[in-house]
Image 1 (cartoon, rainbow, N blue to C red):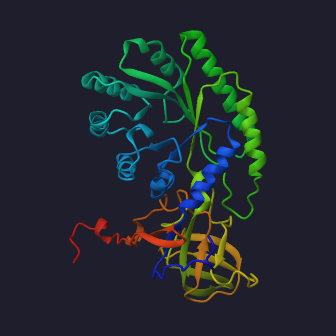
Image 2: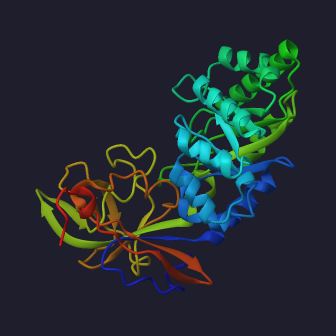
Image 3: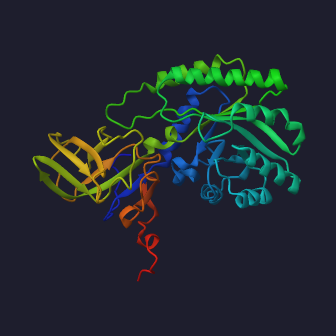
Length: 390
């Protein structure tokens, strides 16, 4: 996206702009570097607004809540292309999904989830596809012994189709050594499942946690990183159908967050920018105490030398509402528009959106080279009061 070639919205407040074409470019780039026949699963939580654009371009969508499942349905994503994941699967929602279709794939993250799916499959006389999610020593998934016990007893659940294993251990993994350890662990697990239970997992769905560059001091040779990652996969003894679950890596760089300079001040020699946005709108993974600088520019002043250090703050009454400390920018004025790059993944949804009852920003999608409004700014005061507002 080039601001000089598009007419930016004349919003009074902060807003997001997402480019679906850029997300599709990312999918194509990843496919060029992943082994042939590798399927791609998109984590809806990364950016729900891009589900419709990605439909038909990825093999699977991960929905971790009833709301995300509704978003997938509204975007026209077929049930068979969704995997219902998450530590809490609402029983009524799960039952309705089985009743309406049953074609979804379900992760199993506890014995109670397994029991529920078994009960529903028998009650509805529908075969259900399940992935056993291996825990990474957290609250997610099931431990190895539980996984082994379910595999061993699989013949007692004939209506359940044990599609394979799911594993996810975290995001922003820049260490190939860590990924190599995961490959070796998963390879050994698949070996053990076959040797002990004669179960050869048809599929491995792996949330690899590919890294993205959020900050100006990040360094990543993505080309070399992906080549080395593929070499790890090529060295596996087992070769199940591989599905790579991604979110951040697909959509991080297809979004921008814009916020206006609302006020300027200087306290004790420190220059402060007060914006009409803040940390309730944008959060970057790994941005501790605002000491790391995201990619920020002043729209229309990109060619002016950055010669002044500013601490960029949001509009919240919180000392933590700092978006960047001591960032070098060209001289700014009230009304200038700041653009935060790489805001396409999680940034808009991980903030404390209801704090101070400020509005949710508008959302635009690029369509045919123009920003198109898909969500107006939403006042949050009605959500934070017991008294009807007039």
